[in-house]
Length: 244
Image (cartoon, rainbow, N blue to C red; front, side, top):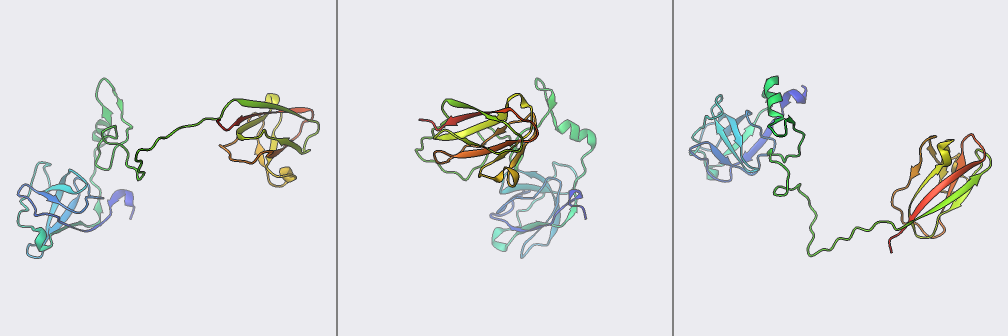
């Protein structure tokens, strides 16, 4: 059964406090519960009843009521946490949203006047400076300094014949480099070990260059290149050193 057409079942979730007279319940987690979803509430002393989710107000709270009007509420004060009150859901068809309602829900009012593509959390709240993206990183009294490579160094290396490997020594402390054939006249092969331009190489298509990631390589590091078809070409290499 296609999951995009159905809500999956949700295992029983415990009440953390007694149900309220206006349908609000506090639970361990509202994860996977959706507005308009049919749920079952029961306890050790109260019968199982089927209700509809009207609001999911937080990660631990939601409001239930009889099926139908979004403003319906159900008195759940008889369902007590001390009597093992729980809520759960069976697998069921997803709530249908008319196409025109979908379009309206995605539209942002003036002065924006556009369909929204915005970051929200799992409760639909906007991600902004007051509600930032969650992270598991912890920084205490930390000072973060972003360093960039310093001035570049340019090398021009001539190659005479195609498919003939040429060794290029990068300047000491190189942290990044870019290489291309002057005028983009040919494709070329790039390897990081001697003899590998014919066996284990990166193929750079004519008209393109290769840009390395940030590197941490020893002094006198070498790269190896070979043009694919043409002779008498110039390889152009620009490299950047670690910041001082």
